[in-house]
Length: 163
Image 1 (cartoon, rainbow, N blue to C red):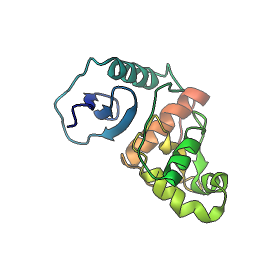
Image 2 (image 1 turned 120 degrees about the vertical axis):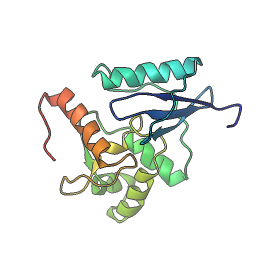
Image 3 (image 1 turned 90 degrees about the vertical axis):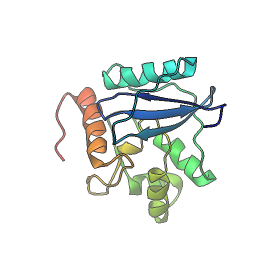
Image 4 (image 1 turned 90 degrees about the horizontal axis):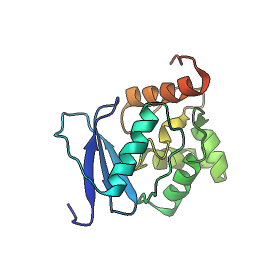
């Protein structure tokens, strides 16, 4: 690993997350499906990322305040900026997001960019669902997407979602 990059892993209700930052910006979050050895990092940004994610999972935080640097094309960057505008506990369809980007014809491109989001949870790609309300694609698996949506919806509305 690049010596200018910091990697740590943290346990969450969604299994471990592997997190990478460069000391200034959060760059990457990966869902781990296999048992991984815990890895800590005492860098101040690592500590802040973990504090905010822990608070999110405890229903104590609904808006993250972290410096982000996701790598992607200009279009992907624009989609990810739109994702950050989706309110906690709400969902948009891929079509809604495509319209916000300028045209319904962007639906597939929006879906592709959504799937390439390197910082899930923080950039809330899980809040994008199918046009008829169905769960569709998520890099961490549909069970995690459902969990995240229910987690946020329950906090916001105090009721259980049924998918």
